[in-house]
Length: 249
Image (cartoon, rainbow, N blue to C red):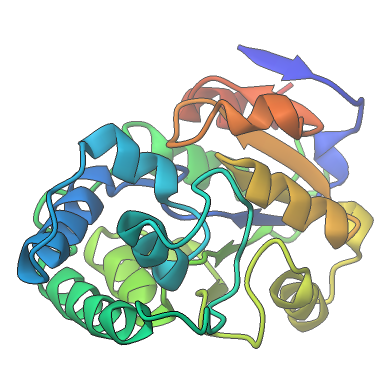
């Protein structure tokens, strides 16, 4: 099902920028296992999988801080910042362990959502009814996951050929929802903001698109669909097939 909350013409879009976790890939189990491995390592009790999944979206440092109880889980706080607390040394050790463990286990259970490869292939095609030599739509990834595992996962799962740019949470001085990364992608692809669409599963992605002046699409099959109620996108889709249908109409 496709539900427009603010009308726009998808066929005018020349650039599609995707979130990664919860949008293109289901990485939930590997993130859960890596956080719980970190908690065991530092002598803390494990957390329920759904709790950890609700912490994902603001990047690895914030994910670890939330797992340690150092940040409000509901805050859209995407900074690493020093907390000047007794827990800072524990946090640094925990983050290092988490990143090392996840680096080795990031593809244990992670998969591409069913229908995503077909949707990407369809969405890349030029506007229906346009000239035969019309250029394909450009596509990119902007994640808050560190860039190296982001690129490794995308390549390993066979999606690399679809994207002209893949950037992560440590690619720029700021993370989503700050628009720096998005504005960089717009500049590098030569596309105006009103001809671009941000696609993601959380309010962070919607805010990122808004902050860059882009159109926004929320996917309800991901990790944080409830946050899309608080920060509604321009259009909501239920499945990867709906993403393709968005451009077929």
